[in-house]
Length: 291
Image (cartoon, rainbow, N blue to C red; front, top):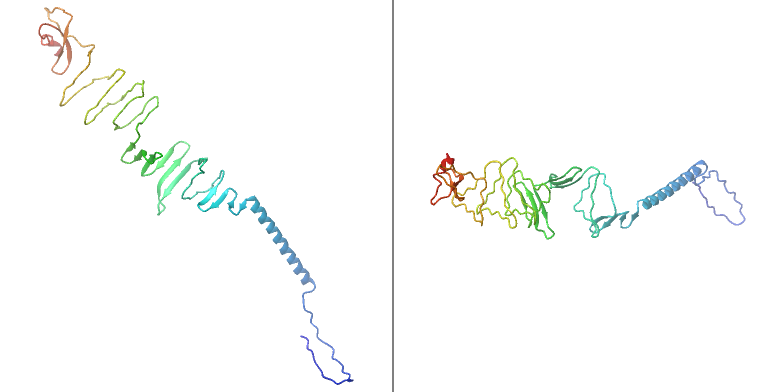
């Protein structure tokens, strides 16, 4: 600290001023000053390099005020243009494509879409793999454009709510259990065939079973017996001509004469046979075939 002294004298008086014995220099000098300048220069260099890297990253990543590259931030959410690859699970509320393009999901292994409840448990899952498509849900439904259910699958059963279910395979449709439907019909000019290779075939209806062939014949083939039974009604064969081929003819007596006409007779067990027609019935005379 420098001390200054003030002395009041008269004119013509010579006063000797004391010499300053202690002088202090203010500032940084020598090697400290050079180190400080070097440090400031290093900071400026790092600042310029960081600024250049930041600009380069912004340019490479296509950062813009509306998003990053093909990823745009909108008021409704995120909009992604082009193809994207996700290496980890993606959790979203809704995924939809543009109005003029379709939505494509693909993977080298499989594509799995899951729905979870508030506790984190999976309530529904759709898994598309290389071998099959698996749907895990309590209720599976396919609806039309207007919201009408077309196909419904749940634990009690499967319902097809369309006007027509068409099976175009050359082998038809295979059902391991029963099928409930109001109508079974083939395409025009195609044959309809119902068969059971190793078991029995049963058709039941509370109000009747109607079998019609509008432009062809009706054929029933069986290795064993074909039984037509009516518990409360009668069996009616209503046709212009009823043909019963390969009916056995009843045993003729020695006095039988052939007239070329036959009558159909029935045994007590329902077996049919032919008997030579006469003025009266001859079924009893030729009933030896029933024994």
